[in-house]
Each structure stands twice: as C-alpha cells, then as structure tokens.
Image (cartoon, rainbow, N blue to C red; front, top):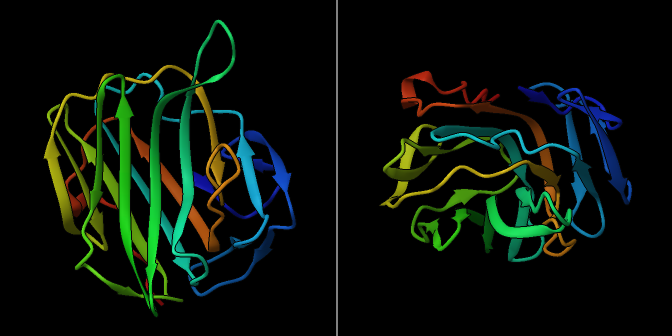
Length: 200
C-alpha cells in the first residue's frame, strides 16, 4: 500500500519531486495534489516487478486540465543500462468537457493493450477508485468496481524499474488533480475484494 500523505517518502521509498506538489486534507484523507503544469513525484521502485498476475488500485480525484494526462506510470528499466524500456503500466485519463474517462495501458514485450471506454464518462472533481487487473490471461479495468474494458493477451512479468506520479516517466502529459493512495496485489482480485472507493 502506498499512501500519499507526505512528499519525501512514498511506500517506504524515497521520492524525487518536480514542481510544487503538496499534501492536502480531503474527504477521503490526506492526498498529494498536482497542478497539471509541472508537478510530479518520482519513486525509485516498480511495485509490480516480477508479478505474473496483479491488481493495481488507486484512489484519486481528476480536476480537469489538458485532455491527455498520464497520472501514474510504472516503468521497467534495462538492468544493463538503467534506461527505461518500452515495458510499462499506466493509469491515464482523457478529459472530455466536464467529464473524464479512464485509459489503462499495459505493455510487455510485443504484447500491449490500451483499455479505453470513451462512453464511460465520469464527472470531474470527485473521488474515484480505479483498478487494473491481470489474471494471467485477461487484462481488465474498473472504475468504482464497475468493469469498463477487458482484453485477452499474455503479459510477461516486468523487471525492476521506477514509478512516476503526476506525469509520464519522460515528463510529458502532466496530471491536474490529487492522489490519495494505491495498492499493489500480486494476484487478480475480484471487485468484491477491491479497496472501498471512499466516496465522501
């Protein structure tokens, strides 16, 4: 479990900060707020490295801003060079007027999939639970426990790497909103086992 209640350390891992993200009090608890311009946190850990199955959950609040936002990025690194590979897991959003929809992306080797349901629109400036789930055969995503997309493919486990929150690893597509917490489980959870959405 990673709780976003401080800036210097997330989940026991030291952070590197860009811009001026800050800790706020919210109806769901403390969270880190990002301005959508130049705020981000980098964490020297890939919490799902080596996972053959996984459930990645987060509780966050999208506030609008640019249409495309990559707000949580787990990236594999080449152990020989330390450079990022193309293997990555992403939570993204697309802003559509006063609403947003989820984009969950996963790539491992030549296998990749973006789960993006453009008709599943949600109001901005509210708190949501999102999840990406992989059971070794099917990759699926959820908003507040409701499945919004799925696809069958084989995703080989990632090697170790690092994480960015508030922006893509290469510092583009900044996020405007706040992140409360994330949980990483090395098996495929059912919606009944998800964290509560904690809607106020």
